[in-house]
Image 1 (cartoon, helix red, strand yellow):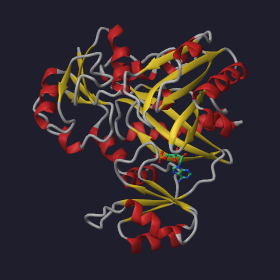
Image 2 (image 1 turned 30 degrees about the vertical axis):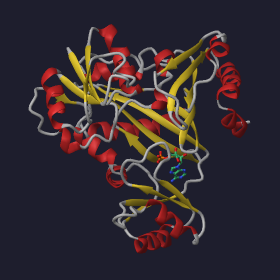
Image 3 (image 1 turned 90 degrees about the vertical axis):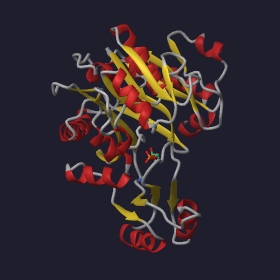
Image 4 (image 1 turned 60 degrees about the horizontal axis):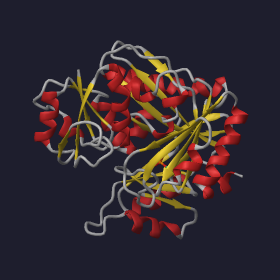
Length: 373
Ligand code: AMP
């Protein structure tokens, strides 16, 4: 069976790496073969929105999935080929727009931030008046890794926030304003649903972001009550969309309660530890689900930590000299703020995991290490 993947970034590459041992084949669509996935599997070279190439992908593959959630839904719908598209485009559409994402959370009774749509400077004033300060103004579409966001703390920030996010050419903007949550922690859940309706959940991930970018994940995290809340939210979304594949939800934890921040209709950076730290990785379970295969166990093998390698790769040798440290290089060129790889550490206890993770973090990402100390 051949699976088509729209977007040949590191997520697609890790899907293919997980799928080859199952006997599956892969075909990517992305701009060139130098992409992380293109270094591994055949690739159709072009724009991710190119209808002709999407059609070819759909003709040559049984299933089409994506590693980038911003593929326009219109580009994916009504393709000439035979391929099914998983996860369903309805879930993709909801996740692409922060406003429909919030409305979906509300519809399903999943607690989320207070929010208002903002499309003018005047509307921003009204939103801030009703929701209050501090808050975050975000672009509704195409934001990632903290891009397209502006934190407002005082009334004088409104003009600067609007100026930062408005399109200078058209004077227009499609934004969302929400309250800034004074969270105790950030967590995420990774869930998977098979075509036959089977559902499985990974243990909760404890995530640390800096400058809007994920730096460190540790798992399993939290108590039964937190996991139950997260699983309840994930189950509602999976059923709502008749979902097939892996779905991620990110939450803020505030006084023992979860507040949904956003969802991703795909495998997720906070689940990279599952490659070594779970019986079946998120990538393998995504591929199994969309290929119609039975799901594998999502149980953790121990206590894992994942540290992102951002901007430039650190020296590999001293880190590899750490017994049991796993190194993942995505084959990308260095650029500030770019995710180039990650390392994973798995240990039998949380204490030992934390000791080793902080030692590695001090080498890899001193600013995050200092912030957490
Ligand atoms: P996002 O792209 O919405 O996931 O935002 C990236 C990161 O910015 C989050 O993981 C948080 O660390 C922070 N952030 C975003 N929105 C909020 C909020 N409403 N309250 C507190 N922190 C936020």
